[in-house]
Image (tube, rainbow, N blue to C red; front, side, top):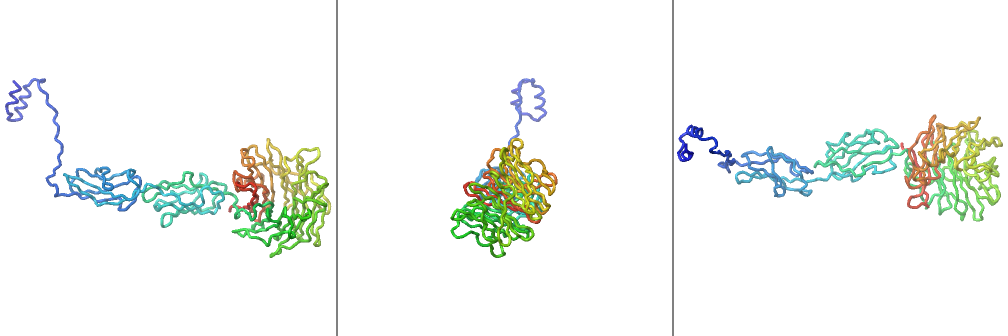
Length: 612
């Protein structure tokens, strides 16, 4: 059949078409794919059924962060398109169910007008405008207590952070704001002020000492826009040391040249000090909040040169006694001794005159006998031909002298110590060189009933002249002397019981690993008869000139660390002349001098108490 006949002859019904197709050869014709016509909106009811757009969230005026979750509800006819307009400009489209997480980076921070627009059949329908505040900046720490990097923080410290803007109260709790000591959590009560800007952590226990404390915020602690608290890049941390400073450094004059520390049994420290630019000695007592002068400054006669040394001592009733070395205009020297009456300083006898003519006086020491309240002083005096230790005791208002046993004719005598045992026997210790022996010898001598009893030397070849000594209530004498060990200087502690010989207290000791030279600068037996030792030692081999103070306490069979390296300027300047005192409860008080990093010629006095 000719296909043209099919094209010209109208088909009466589908069956005729099917028959014709079956009669056609298979390869004679191709039938194109049938494409469905595009949907065309039914606009017959346009204008009769409007589209209503209602905001679901966020609320008008609400802040939004980096991502704004927008939700609207549409009722009425089905829209052709739905768009978001920000400040009148279409920025994106919405699809059913008309919930959009829109990134706000394309607009500036601050208030913007948001409108949802629906279109249908050439008509536009708009939601009510909603002003939202774009805020992509998280809250920052305006102030912190303690400050980041603080070195002297109390174990009772309350932790406080003031924020630049409020945070959501519902997200602030003990799980989202934590206080850490190292990696361990310290339990604390967490609270937020009513305005949402001040966050407080009140520890439920004392902060652990010798730890680095830090505060950690969870990301869920956010402002109303959902921005997390922005912590500083270095974080927020501080140190809780074993000891805290008492007030500011004591610098009433440009420098502190000599000082002496004592502690009352109840725990109140006192210092006597003198500095350049004055001839007077000032005694001060800590009030709990500040240092307060105890009486007027002490000095010799009008016009006398500056005093050169001072020493403070408390008797068994905590009455202060002070002595100082007073040069005279004619080149001579005196030692003045005063006792505090409760309202003023009273002289104890006439000034002490050295035994040797034209002698200089150094290393003045003072103790007060436990019964009778009689003061005893000792000092080293030297003239052009002689060197000796002189001991003076106040008897019937006059100072009577005697030579410290074994101290005459000793070359290079230094590091003088004076102690009284429970029988008020005088115990002197010093270091000196010996003919034919290298190093320094430590000498200890006890005066009993007018006789001098020399102990065997605890050390004959000490690495340096510096050593420390104390006497216990049981009569034992304890000495810490320097020794060489593994290429560096360590400390050997020995004790001499009332009957016996020198016994070691542990092995040779130092605090810092490596080749650092340690020296014992003070020993003290507290009210519980526990031995306290102060070491001055470099913090590291790399900074051998920067010496810090280390406090150790002997506990049965080992030295217990009482804190880390102590220094007012950690890693910068060396401590020197460290002293220790204890109260009736065994609390340890420390004092030392240290120069300012900016001016190495100006020593300052630093006094520290236990951090508890």
